[in-house]
Length: 239
Image (cartoon, rainbow, N blue to C red; front, side, top):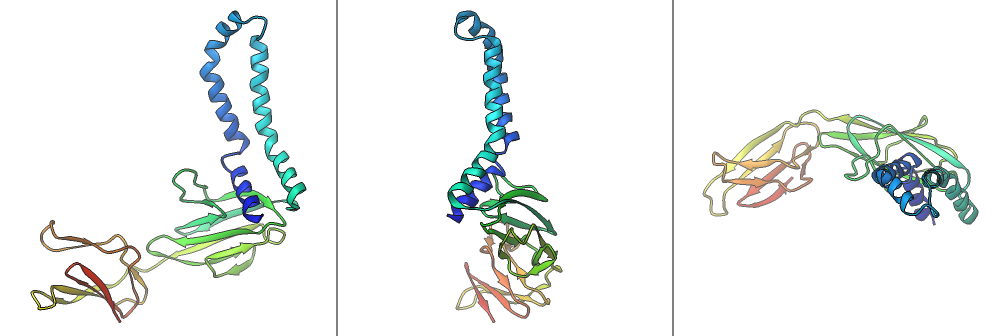
């Protein structure tokens, strides 16, 4: 039940917003407006310019009224409680997800700071993911804090949520050992000499030739004081 209600609420807060739906109506009306006089002339007993304008206005009113009607129906069927506004923001660089909506969605991203309407009896799930080179510090939930990246909030108590990220210091990496033409194959070792986790996601390894390229797999992390070994096309960790 909660998943259905929250998904419907997500859509009401984004693709089903009145302004967005009415803009679609206006675009469609503008596209065929030049044909309406000829249509009226062909069917004078069935349609007039004013009746066409009234029909367009009915569409716009339907989309304007839809959110309140739907929220009332959801409460009648599922007892979702009163409508509550949730304000979401972020400090620093990271991804924020509200139920099924995300700040980095390629089709319909939510722009932070963002606000949406949900229900007092249906908890909302928030998730924070830091961008590369950053770490998640915690959620500021209207004065209360939570260090978990994924939280479920009760909107009867919480009306705002701020995901706090901070930039990590640049990693201190060193190639501290190289073995060429060995019996076990060529390999070299990358050592994390810093005090923070180093993420090598998206990095490439190469020698003097641009033909010899190897991409490090996604989400390869080296903890402080640990090594990462690349060996003839294979990669592994060494504590």
